[in-house]
Image (cartoon, rainbow, N blue to C red; front, side, top):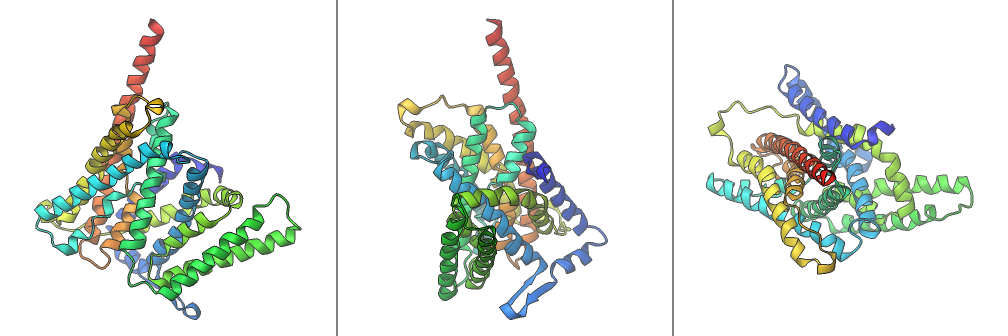
Length: 395
């Protein structure tokens, strides 16, 4: 399973799964695949009735958010975001990478004559896919300074924080306060119990096994309660990841990361990309298509680059480094790879809406353009560095 820890392999699997989903949906077996995706699998005793597609997006994807939350907590405590000074530059860049895509999306939809039902898709181009962006950097940016990866990682994590808040606030449907309160209690119990596994010594192996089983049960209960509360169930994964004790959380992430990369994310990418390409001319495409397709690559590269350059003014003079416009542009292009989280946002924003499929295609197109831009910019930056190093050696 160690091969699936590779950021390159994870990115390739995501891309392959999305392309496969698109191909299958538009093949002779497309109708059968869509029917299967819509098949409901219920657990009557728990009052849960979800389609296979929703089991993937609401259930399996919670594992991805659990791992993202564990990484987020690590970065906030001991990693790249563990002090205000270190978090400031990626924070300002992330803010720019959210606000500019929103402005582009709303402007394009407004110019295209879209109403309020289309405006609600503004969160779609705000997200950055951590796994995919790091994978593209690993493929095309080998040899780039470590600070570029650290900056991208911090930026993407902050992007995910914003995405999590948007999902929890914007896409909540009349939340059931009782269920939500019970979910909070379950998460607190989960966090407290995980401290037992965080201790250096265990009373016995049997106790450790019992505690692990109880944690799994509490985690599933928290997920079910969040689902029933009306808030998107992936938020349960975020809450559990943030509440878990650092030591067992690190072990859990180590064990689940290859499973998430090999199964969870590819399954979601396949399911989300399982859409029929509309049989319409380019002129008949919804303003949402053009808004997302432009806002992801263009909005991210502009917003992140401006934010990264402007943030240098707010860093204490002693801690300033010379802003590198080229690197900022490359990171901005990587930030435009919305993919997984953008596909989730699209599904939430346009659930049961006619433009949902066009939104999915736009996310794939916008992310694809961002991949190409990032590859070109990363190769350019590597050539510049090699030329600079060669000149330095010649002197």
